[in-house]
Length: 521
Image (cartoon, rainbow, N blue to C red; front, side, top):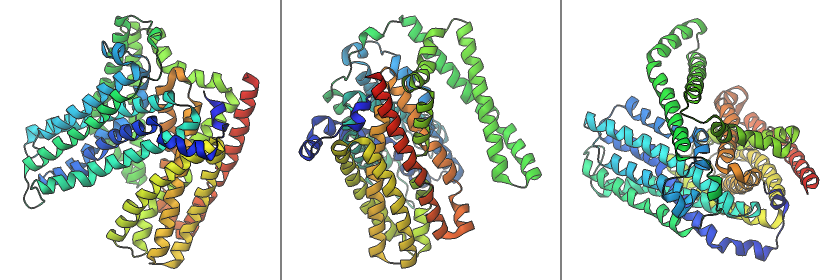
């Protein structure tokens, strides 16, 4: 925990000077490394598969390779407690895991490059490479978050997250637009597919992965924790084997239950007359049964002596228990409510923004220029501005300011609605929306980082980062239905109103943290 830093204030000169600290630059490099893999699984890979003549249904299956990002909290405890032979002793826990993850990323990209998807056998190897890339990239994310939190105090987290976001966006541009440029330059197109063009493109992307490796050797290990590794090598191996057994059981169950679940969906859809609802119910039940299978396998590993009960408890239960012990039940629930709801207003609106622009008559080129180019620049500027403000005013004040500005900018979309096809108004709204998003995100990441207990950095932050988008994304799935029911004006007012309770939660959380600090000091 770093509660004092959440309220700390610094002078303007000190705040701007912090922008040029070497840790901020290193985080820019690590952010680039984190942003590189995602589009090599999604859009860039989809275009490669499309040019190779792969069916659209098969292309979309490859997006499942990125599920590791959503479930990274499952193996985050391993990264908190599992030393890597030789490497951890030489580099430290965080840097050793970073290096292994980056080696996995580069190796996975090379594996994908070596497979021609037009050949069915090699397509399987490409799928394996995509899964390995998703898993390695998610592992790198966990390690970067843990390093960032441990490397600097909470008042610096805004700037660190801003640098990370800027690097991440640049990495996505390289893996997205950059990959398409290279593939075109090397001679592949929709009409004339050339495997060697994509082969060299992905090898170039693998070379960009070395930027992250360089950053790993430039940074210093934030905490020396050799004394924490009190368990025997056999116990660490048992924890790893148990994790792999549970993951394998989860995957096998999903594969074997696929046909049965499809039949149940069909039968339920005929009864409910709603395919979407039927699919949701069946998949939810399927997930529940899969988790039960994982629980049974975990128990079996403990009973058989493969895994140490105390070690599993320390890895998975202790981080959650520690959070409630640190803040008390009432404050902990308040903080969890704020974490789960803070981004609800902008995520619910964000799902509909591009559709809204299209409905106003803006062309794809106009939307791309405004949102993807200009908007991206404003997000980066807003992130760094948020980081500086968090240092100058304190994280909790900027957290409140960010939530308030999100409400106001959401209402600005009403102005654009009644202005119609007006590029000047559009750019103004996009600038405000993305600038505020950058400010709010920087403050929010700093806030989350200050809550984490340094004993369980990776696990607790992984839980927070999963929780912060769970409910907002679930509600965002109904954004289209809300627009159809009450229109765009009502929708924008609705997204503004659901942001108002967040202001109350920020104030209550700030008071709760202040009281907690007074009691413990």
